[in-house]
Length: 219
Image (cartoon, rainbow, N blue to C red):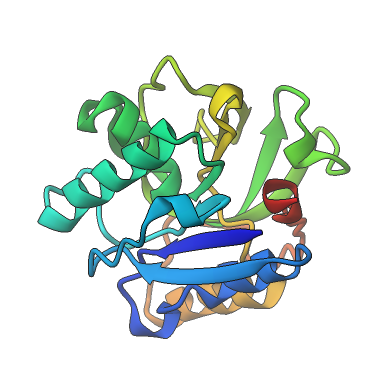
């Protein structure tokens, strides 16, 4: 199986989406290819069996030229019914392709840190996690109006659309960051505190995390 990881990170230390690719590669006999969204490095879609779309510091409502080209590329993947998983910016990008920028907005309360996710409907993606679990979040924007094609099945206290699915297209999206480990999440929180950031930091020191299995996408 060949999986395309679209890396949209703007911070050099995250180039290559190593946190995502590690999870994808561990899912089994998988050939992982990483390409950069901001550089419009888009290979031919017919070579791939699944696509994973990373987060980004780029605003989901950005009008940068690469974002428009990125959306056209994702739409082509949808037309081919290639299974996709969108994470954070990727989650928002799927909504933008389907509903335009008007379905996206600034979060009234940003989520930074450990977030309690409430599962609203059963889905194999969250198998074994129970009715709620903790994971890492880092977002100031969100899907404010869900496109009709997307079905939401999880929420948090401050974000109504935490996980969505489009079964007929094999598409899943999550607002949170299931790829972040406990150590990575705690380090990110500590870095923000050292920089003087205090407001909106969630769950500092809670030490609770359960990650969504990426193998459910690529198996």
